[in-house]
Image (tube, rainbow, N blue to C red; front, side, top):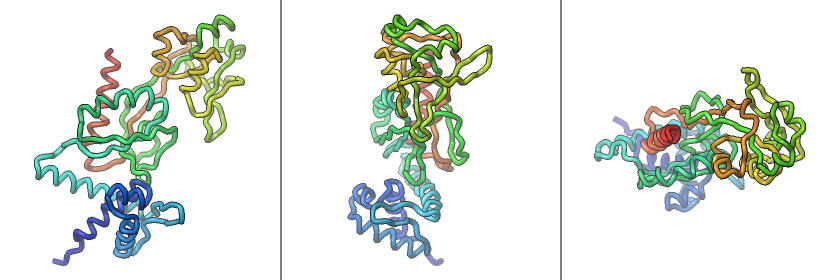
Length: 307
């Protein structure tokens, strides 16, 4: 039988996958203990064998072509299965180890994920975690992330979505602000207050505020001289400093509420929430570290709900 898969090709595939995950030949070389020219030559040999271009190269960066993206997705699954088979034979099936790359929005990252990470690392000492905190959607294939935490209902059917929680919203202000400007009792009262807006840089538009009114979900646009670009935490910091009213998540405002630095208003119009999901690519063999991480988040959120 003619061999069509040899150790040299397997090594080139591993190098190719590392370059795809890290977004370049130089970071792949650093991670693998090779030189950038060695990584480049290995990828070129693989491209010659396949007869396709896997990367589009410029003087500044490399990026996956459409063929490269498809090949990477299949190779990543294959390498995961090979790793799983090796662990099974060596009695290490399901052992949690390796590097986990996680993308998370700033609000959830600072107030939910980062405080939990030390406990996860304590439970799994063979795992290292790379966390990117940014308010943007990531391309799992091109950027090499294992898990992303995102707000809102997921739209990409290629991803597995696990609901972490429904984060409730409230409107908050400092005691000093309320003494100077009064406490709003109705949604119409918002027109007479300083309302701190959250603005998305991608659109330049402020997000509406979300309420319940007369048993219905409603959205309300507020006007203000104060806004924060892409930073809900910044809105609440301005509110704590007396800058006005701000809408945000209860889990972000909890500490300030407990010590009286913020007060909640318009509670009769509360009840709105946003879902947060853990997302990961669909693979027949989910890596042990991804499974352990997602299970840990679900367990921790459930425990927080019981406290």
